Structure formats: C-alpha cells, structure tokens
Amino acid sequence: MATTGGFQSFDWVKKHIANGDKVARSSSPHYDGKKDNSQYLNADSIKFLHDQGIKHVISLNSSKDGKYSGKQGIEALLKDANIVYTHLPVQDFQAPKEKQLETGYVNFCKHRNSTLVWCGFGHGRTGTMISALQIYEEKEK
Image 1 (cartoon, rainbow, N blue to C red):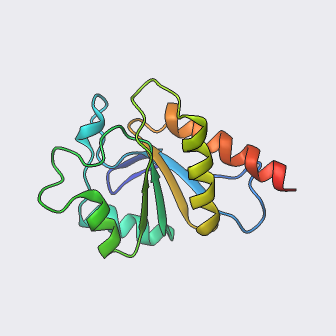
Image 2: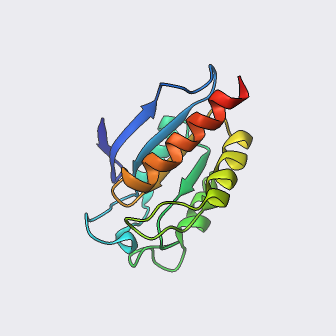
Image 3: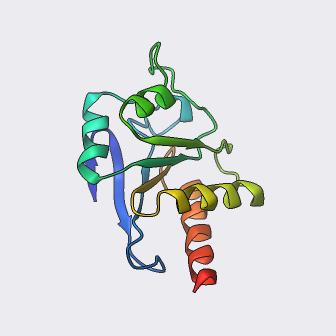
C-alpha cells in the first residue's frame, strides 16, 4: 500500500484478473476524507501514475473535478499526460448503476494492462467496480 502523489491505499488487484491484465484501485488524488470535490492532481500525482504505468483512470467520484483543480480540470491534466479518463459519476455511499459497471468494463477492455479505478476513499464505489471487473473477467474464461 502506498500514499504517493496524493493517492491513498493504492494497490494492484491480483485475484480474479486475467493474466496480463493489470488493474489498480485507490482513493481519488488528495482526497480529504470528506468530500469528492476535494480531489485534485498535481505534478507528483501525474508522476506517480506514470511510474505505475497507468494509462487509464476510471473515476466513480460524483464530482468530475475538485475544488482545487484550478483552470485545467482533471480530465485535461490526464489527457495532457496521455492518460485516458472515464468518469462515471456516482454519489458517495451509493452503488454504480448496471450500465455504469458495463461502461467501466468496456473501457477497461481498451486498456487492460494499465487501469486505475478510484473514488473518494477508494473502497465502496471502487470496490463495487473492481468486483464487477472481476466478474466480467471470470465470465470471459
């Protein structure tokens, strides 16, 4: 587990993921423990994502950008860093809808070896999406 670049609880998912596929999970960057809109990226965050080989982010935060994101939002910063951003907004303490889980999987399949899933704290909504990805992966076998 790492707390680097503002990502808390970053961890690679190892179980029920096909060989060669890589998916990680974490909090949203610089999450303050209270609100989805506390997320923001900085140079250290981008460096951390690059160091981990992340090329795709699935965000389940209700807010697309955080209050500290500045003029350039998270999606634009990730795009400039050659990282694809899939935003599937889900309110905290709610579950993603079935269509969002399916969309997450379709986009994961385009970046099977380099996806990070995040939500505020990195457990509830993220855990639900990770479980869905694992179920879809098992179904593919």
